[in-house]
Length: 625
Image 1 (cartoon, one colour):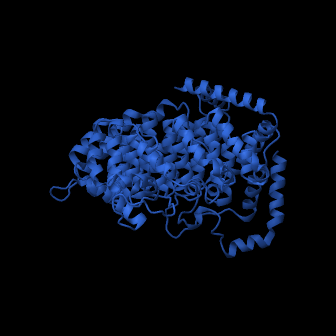
Image 2 (spheres, helix red, strand yellow):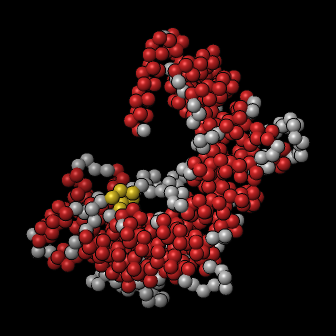
Image 3 (tube, one colour):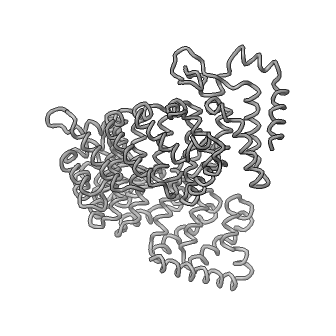
């Protein structure tokens, strides 16, 4: 393997040659290495102004580029991989800081560390930190070095009691190597990093790169590991999901370090409350503590609210209201509310938010925090007070466009049956379709469009007049509102409005991206009798629904919840359009999933199959209940 590494180096020298070396001397490549913009000398303190950081030469950059490519190809055996990792790390030794702060070297080293043993990672960290660990700050706050630091400490997930003891025994057998003795274990290096972070806590939480290292360190200290993203360049339209966390056993010393780090952050709560980067660090700590250290999390939540409410403000105005309107601090309070216990929510509402919820719900920033308060308090008595205060202001909130607040209240009322009837009445009043009662038939289009009766129909129809027809308009929050209302115990008004829709409007609703989810909820959550009534109205549009991207998904969801007789009715309506269904890119999947070919030729076997699936689904639903 060492010969292979040497050949790679030789190829790199031939590839770049003297011309490449001259180009590097004439104009430094600022695109490689985060150190290009740093004022430090590289392997020294990195703080002297006017001294350029030491950079990798062109041949070495090419070498690490090929190392990265080789790592991406994979290895035939674990032994070959281990030998390759060992050889490359031997090349890194002595110039770890320079490699880490170079863009190409950083990418290669990140891949390499994920394949390294804890002992090898500890040796790299020992060199990056220097004798006292003071260099950890310079490397962590570098745009390339920060990624290497994160990859290094993430390897603590491999830590176990057995593995740690093996590491210690192996290092004891290698007393001939003084460097291995000095670097200590990976746990020791992480503890050294913790000390450096606490000594320079403000610099870390305010730095865009150092703060990411600190957030990863919080995960590691708590024993949480975030699943690595496989696709480094996700599609533009792909929604960024929350990282999936897995727990592992962390050393006991880490629990104490997490406590000390929490105390350091609380001591600098003034920075965390006003600086966006620092605020995200504290939010990460609250999230992790809620998962792993709930008692510590409660203390942090109480301490944050205590600090914010102790600040000076105008007479008669709670300082918390001022912070709620701040774009940075409102996000922090939103996280605090999300993980708060009953007593803190009750006291915060009573002493600071009472009679102020509607003005806060109308504010462009504070309304998100109010949504968090509503969601967090749903299982406590304080929710009833929050609801009673917000309900009269629904029309004003609707006019402001902050529908997230109303949707959150409605979704919370799913779990509060005693407020469902009142909630629906307030919605009817807010959308101007409460009186006369004939307007109730128009409530579904109004809820979907989030427009009042007067605006939607642009008319002042008298009582008893026929409801004018208008094209169906569908809004994202309107769809969420209808989906939530579909889970209420009494849905008669909503279902009557649904039956009032024409087949064309049903088709428009079922083939729209967000509208299809609303129609799905209305159908699948109905009783078998109510479901049959809706399906009879859909019989004429089964084929165009199946040929639609969103309509086909709706039809499959309806099929899964339908009875045997309802499935047979759907199949009878679809079979005559066989050629159209088989040739359509969406409908052909419906044809195959519903087994319509079997329905045509072997109806008895089809019925037996559907009956078996129905019994199996019922059995599993009984178990889940």
